[in-house]
Image (cartoon, rainbow, N blue to C red; front, side):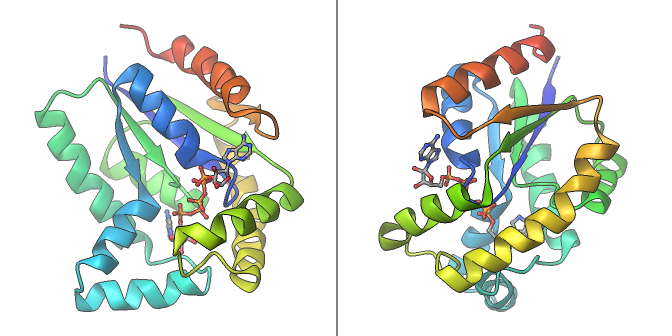
Length: 189
Ligand code: AP5
């Protein structure tokens, strides 16, 4: 069975950090919406320039663009018979989740890494010096957190039977142990 997991949580909650470990353990295909968008920007396409403008302000890019990029990779992953899909940073709002299920298929589990706003800010400012990301600055971080706090609640409410909320304030390995326990419950091989 090929499982589909969504990974949600505020900016800097550790989605990317945990996904790297999950991929190493389970061999899932990792699709980070942010990375897919940054690749599009790096390609130098006119669409990339528009995406960069929105991302630098901490705003969402058009949902159809993100879903299109994800869908393309999923179709390829299906051909390659990957054991699971790890969709990181999607959905960002309920409509994105509903659209994914309509266009691609049902989700099996939603991993929600829960971290306080202060911790998010501290982690992202800590990363800012080395990340080179246009959105890792104090003003944009504030906006990203505000957008997350406004939009994530309805996702968690709608998918409450599939959401596993993990306190992600602690050490990376402890958080990963919790995430693994959750994944083992749905990843029946
Ligand atoms: P995206 O790239 O997804 O950014 P994000 O959600 O803001 O998350 P980050 O990648 O910044 O952080 P993360 O949670 O992966 O944490 P990380 O592991 O790196 O999206 C960027 C933008 O793209 C959006 O703002 C939007 O414009 C657009 N976009 C993306 N998806 C979209 C969508 N679906 N629809 C519309 N627009 C979309 O960790 C952060 C730091 O903390 C690192 O330095 C790490 O080492 C450290 N750290 C991690 N875990 C711990 C720990 N347990 N303890 C201490 N430090 C830790």
